[in-house]
Length: 437
Image (cartoon, rainbow, N blue to C red; front, side, top):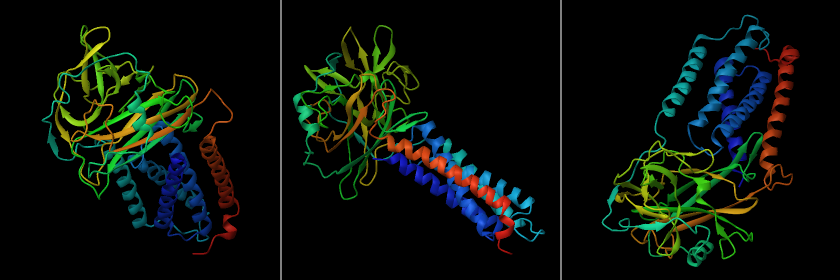
């Protein structure tokens, strides 16, 4: 649940380890009090890196180049601190000590390696389209049309399947779903958002090594209002207006969500996630595939959420032909399979919490076009997960996950206090306790 706290601990650990390495390289660990100071200094720098990471990314870009940030910050600051302390002869009783040539060169080389890795990886695409291509010989995405209205109702079978533990048993493909969410709005660091604010979310679908390939992957992602707070969608609940959310907001390989164009003006207007098809409210599929290109959505801005949605890559395009009618104008040419033990590109998104305080859930479902009709509400998924959260009123004092926010800021204050005490000890009493060379 508290993945943000885990991230904080990881950033602090990376920075502390880097600080100790630099301490050993530059002064060979010959001062115990300074080594202890470097541990504290590294921990505080790691916490600062975590705060920068959280407020720049929403805290969801895990296992990425952002892990270089604490390494870079502590490398720059700690070498400067060590040199300054050396200049005022605090580190050692031997006044003739100076930084050796080779340790200095080694530390500079390491610093440039860290900086180089940051620059290079920052410009490398986050994901590449991997896996074999599987031609689509079906007509699943041909002549599909629907109507934009009545998105609120959740069909009985859709709710029944999402609320149950059942999964499709006719496949040898096994999928695990990992999801994360966060609400970041300075000074807020939480997992439950306030009304009219944004919830960040991320999901990854991974095939297990003991199963087969996910040959024709598609997923469904939708948000419901859990009115009766029982943790599952049912007759008393409703879908959230798809205008309130958008995904993927990151470049995500071959992931194709659905974009609606106005036929009259030939402009992209919004991402759509729910349509009425054949008289039933239907969650639209999101495929991992190559598609025919009638229209190119990449780089366009559509109206989802107040801030708009900048579409990161080409999506499946639909054409709005009248006030409510839409028709799919593109189709899948070939699927991008996910080999056993591999993952679908991670999908990150945002939800604008505009429908009032209350309990909500994001439903993630994984399907395979070998077994499932993408527009069938009766399809039983290969795997599914419901990620529950609560939208609270502004400045509500008793928020359910305030522990994340408290732990983050209290840790920072505590480390800042230790850093002040450590600095005083090194500068004022260091000469009395430093170990002789």
